[in-house]
Amino acid sequence: MGAFAEVGVVDATRFRSVLGHYATGVVAITALDSEGRPAGLIANSFTSVSLDPPLVSFCVTHTSRTWPRLRDAGLLCVNILGARQEDVSRRMAAGGDDRFAGLAWEPSPGGAPLLKGALAWIECSVDEEHTAGDHRIVVARVHRLDTHHDGDPLLFFRGAYGTFDG
Image 1 (cartoon, rainbow, N blue to C red):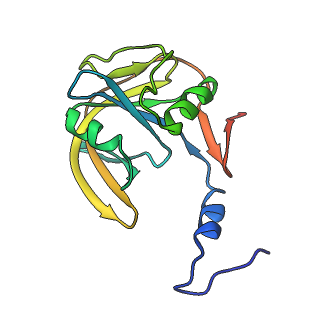
Image 2 (image 1 turned 90 degrees about the vertical axis):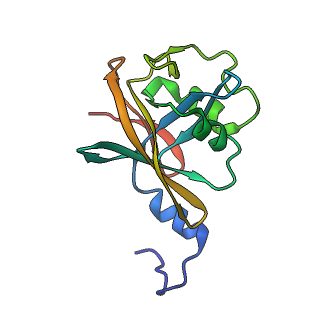
C-alpha cells in the first residue's frame, strides 16, 4: 500500500500522482479570437453538468494566456479528441503563438474551429466562472453538439496518453 497524507498535509506531487490514476478523456477547447485567429487549449477536466439546461464544465489554470482569448470570443467549441489525435493534444498543450499551424480544421456551425478527426463537438458559451485554488472552473451553456467521426477516444492516464481497448 502506498504512502498516505495526513489531513491538511497534501504534497502537490503526490496529489498529481494519485489523481493521475483516474483516466480521463482529452478535449481541445477552441474559438476564433477577437482578431479572427484560431485559439485553443487542452483540458482533461471536462464533464457534463446538467441536462436541463444543457451545461458542461472544464477547468483552466489561472496562468493561462489562452483562456482570456477564448472567453472573450463568446462562442467556444469543445472538440472531443480521438485516439489518433495525440499530436494535436501535445501541440495545443505546448503553448506558443500558433498552435494551429498545420492542423486541419473547419468552422463549426457557429464558426469556431472544429478539428478534423475529433470524435464529437460541442458549441457552447461561458455561463459562469468560479475561482478554485490555482484554477478556474468554467461552466458553459451548450448551444449545438454532434458526433463528428467514429473511433476510439484519446485518454490520459498516469501522465501518459493512451486509448480505450474495449
